[in-house]
Image 1 (cartoon, helix red, strand yellow):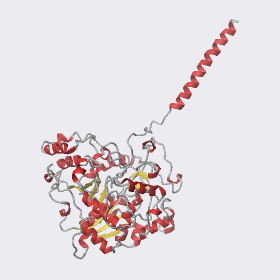
Image 2 (cartoon, helix red, strand yellow; image 1 turned 180 degrees about the vertical axis):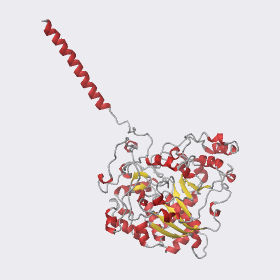
Image 3 (cartoon, one colour; image 1 turned 90 degrees about the vertical axis):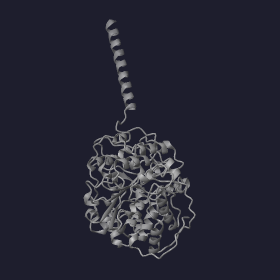
Image 4 (cartoon, one colour; image 1 turned 60 degrees about the vertical axis):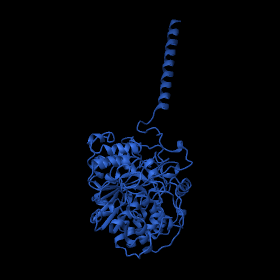
Length: 525
């Protein structure tokens, strides 16, 4: 009897142990998670201000973090101005990031590690090279959170995604390189991204496309932005004007004058900005004008172009935002004369505006979306991103570096001209940084070459040559009226069509080289 009782007790203990082990395995299966995959963020990625915005505060340029806390309003900025002579100690509150980003090579890997959101219209983020606003009617829980691959894990290859699906894709780590087009047109066409057909690209080169040819995702994005009208656009002009190339160039020269804040208008005059902004206006930095200038887009299509030497041969080179040259000299060159930056570059600590060499020893031109009315008081109280505080601090630290803020009136004048020369209604959002930069350099140079604004035969979904982010919206636009901007630039192109196809190069005359008939100033509609 005793042996049986002993065996029964052993069986009971074994059973309890087995059940406990099974429970532990089940518990681990349900609770096991990927430590490299962060939980969904509470802040919406969608505001594309260039990348993305509900009221402009939840956006990021490729996965931006929350903007740092700056002193708000006129009182805070006035205090900064009053401390102008107090020494560098007062800057510590803003430059919380550690030093050590003096070299481009230290900064670039941070950019390459960012995984941007999926493409627009699956209820996720909008991508652009400028500002982007949140789409209406999109539930917050539907917006995805950025996902980073764990170390050593390979992302799906580009060919693993269904053709024409249109979502963003993560590429492999390492140098961003693709097979460059061969000497035969057929080989180059075969490498063309599946999301932009041969026929569409050919028609874009000829200026014969419309929004009806866009994917349903981008058409819906455009429709939603038209309905939202975040910036209060009230266009009173006439659409669809068919000006000749010369008439359009003269219209741009007459109306789109590249103006910057001079500190003489309210509320900036009362805040002492006249002694803060550079003494020499941007338009007078080169009184005799520059002979030849290059505007280098950050598009992924510039990879494997071997255009670096040609780009550096220009008198001046304009680049955008955080686009680096280190490691990409063969394709983009290494000369930088002017850098246009949007307000997120100033406010997002991930871009290390204070520390990075990208923003040193160059002319800086910043901009931020303002209401269509260009009401400076309203804009100062509620900018899309508070660029005013870091601007003050940078000017106090670097008083000899030319650093300007574009006047909102100039930006919306460009928008008016795009809409007037387009039959369709365009997105009621500011033009892209690319278009702003093109017109800015046309006002400073006698000849302007623009690279990969209108895509070449190397066209790809890779948004920026230095970031692993894929989305067709970066080429054709969602937040920005990019498609219509490019159609306008195509009409202005004076270069051979072969340069557009092979190099992605547009040749434009500078305003100084134009011979326009005298005309009375035209009031803004």
